[in-house]
Length: 266
Length: 266
Image: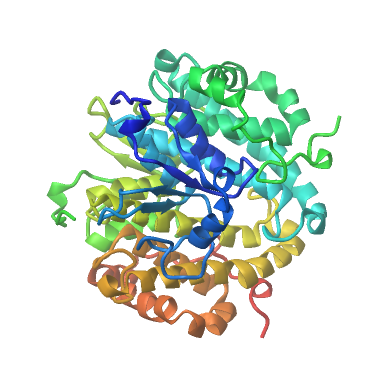
């Protein structure tokens, strides 16, 4: 991997376009910046009327998002001033897509072909689990209230906890074991932090918030994942600083929600 | 984009590892090969005991999939003999990941940065819709029977048809309009076929199978997408040949299923 500098002058003024307040899918992107100490503007949280700007770009009904870029289905998006074809801004949507772009720019993905695509494989799988955990409280309609689908959510959450978490956790645990010689349980690919690590870590952290009983009960089953890996990522110097800062948003009513009735019952 | 040759000797012997018989998520990968006339082995369908091989690589509980590659959560996977770090096989999982890898190798994605990531954006969004259509018949538990979640499926399918299809179709329609000068409604990015086109097309084709009434009722709302684009992709020379061949599998009990009760009622 090319070394990356955290000198802000060596990077464009990256802008994250996402909903304000919640970590949500934007958090996967924040973690990439934070992991290497590269600055970015979180438009909805940092700029006056920032959320209007996010909405006008990512939630419009036009044939362009902005600056000649194609339309966007939904936030998050990334705006990179000057990186578009004619020196305009490049605007990218889709969480994994943004992570793949930034992974290269920030040195958070290997340039070796096999490692690169194996990193993508882990990122995509972690984001699939993120979606499934979201669906545990919204199994029927993403735009309707939880209260209007809480009966179905009870069933969906049981399947997510009983069948899906073990399937994904076993996969991540074995991925860490596969890479143990290089990663020592701390890294999923090779011997240093990548977007695979930050992305898997964030899903685990969200799962701890959503399902504290379930996670406590399962912790011993996946020691490399839920102990070594989960704790070591938190100790990465830049991430440690970030997690203690006001920039790290609390979970609430986003992708990860804690409804006690959806967790394992004591 | 670099021109690609369909001379089989200029490509490795690609192998698709997926479930037999159904199109499923493997179909997105088949379409990439078929669109450029590059040969591949569909292991479960083409080889004796092929599905055992798929299962031993993609559905095992080991810390390796095969040939020193990391584990895999689920099929599809791609095996590329000789492309691994030490001259062993490279094995990749995750549908979008495989498409991004092949997009580059087969000349189905632009090498220009903005176009490349905008192509990825469309591929990922189309695959999100693919997942939502899958969930319309399996909203509670992917491994349980439809019959055990048919009441919830009625509600989920109504939301997919009434809210989600229009949201995604409007997005794809506007993407085609955005690219109209270059693509003429036939291509989503630039002036030639990409993995964005084959992937969006396959989701539309599956939606036609799953929800024939709904699609008929909506056809006039999205003329560029459901008329110009949908029909022109089918006329791409290699794809036309493929769709008429025995290699194209019929839909059945996979991602796309036709349950009349989940479709719009006449």
